[in-house]
Image 1 (cartoon, rainbow, N blue to C red):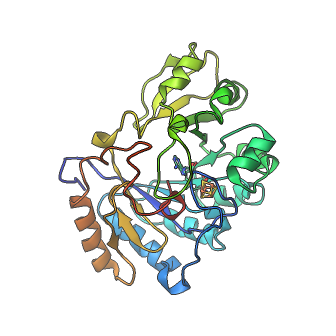
Image 2 (cartoon, protein in one colour):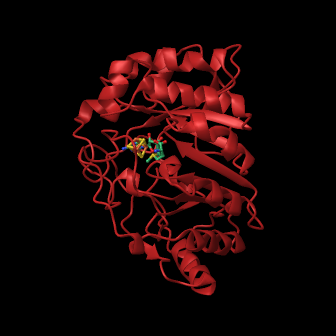
Length: 317
Ligand code: SAM
Ligand code: SF4
């Protein structure tokens, strides 16, 4: 379905939980989230009904996210059922990777074709610092499991944080020479109340180009990343610039939160509740949300924080 600015909305990110087994500093508060009541969250059936309703309006691609989607007990059932919804052509998942050792193969079998794994550093101490409680070895084991499970595509997502991981850009990019995976560097977004990062942390994507002069531009793949490749590499390097060079004019996505709110724009407080609605009610609300999708997300920087009204673990990235 086209929105009011002629953008064809074909991609829905579906957050299945706000909970997580990590506490990344840029994503959620140190003490985690105030667990909502079960009745406030979408049930599995409601999630699948919302996906059917979205597919009827032209959504073809889903990304399952969270919180950490793999802590959700019924994650395989959600993926399996979502993959069977007529019109849905692709199911991707975004995960911190720590639970992939046991879940990579079952997810592949459930119909997930692509996986994005978040990895901000290759240093064990820094991993512990940024995630507040995680172990790098768990994420690395997860990446290995994903490589073995035979997904169509594996991407590593690195949030660029000035003074934290900018010196690691070459080492992270180097992974694309050794393994069949892509690395994407994403600008840090100033969310609601997560992260006490100062202005120096918000570095633009161009830092990657400065650090890697050998990068060669490659044709875009229809996504929002500017794509490059290291000579001889197996995978590409993607640069995603929501802050310094927004891509709202090409935005084709909507987001469904775990508590059933449709967000037509990541950084807007506008939400449309699907909780408790039947299929027809959801189709109507989805239409309203798509028609009201704003043209862009407004100024975003260290001083002008996101107006999403939620932290990233409550949206899904
Ligand atoms: N737990 C999963 C994971 O970490 O991949 C999925 C949910 S997480 C909210 C989705 C993505 O959002 C991750 O790649 C994470 O790095 C990114 N993210 C979270 N907070 C962010 C922020 N403030 N700026 C940029 N990216 C952020
Ligand atoms: Fe959890 Fe992902 Fe947020 Fe890290 S980025 S706290 S892994 S939801």
